[in-house]
Amino acid sequence: MLRWAIIFFVIAIIAAFFGFGGVAGVAADAAKILFFIFLVLFVLALIFGRRRPPK
Image (cartoon, rainbow, N blue to C red):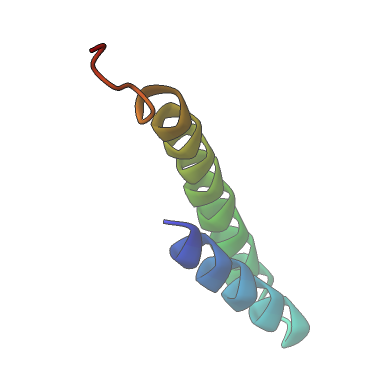
């Protein structure tokens, strides 16, 4: 998930550099959404992934 966010971020930077504002905006929005999804899943994995059954 984080890999896709970084890929879309790089696409947005390259598109903005070449003057494709619409493509850059869409790619930046997609990167932002994917990053926040990654962040939520990461926090949930930290919270619920450490559970071990009591002995």
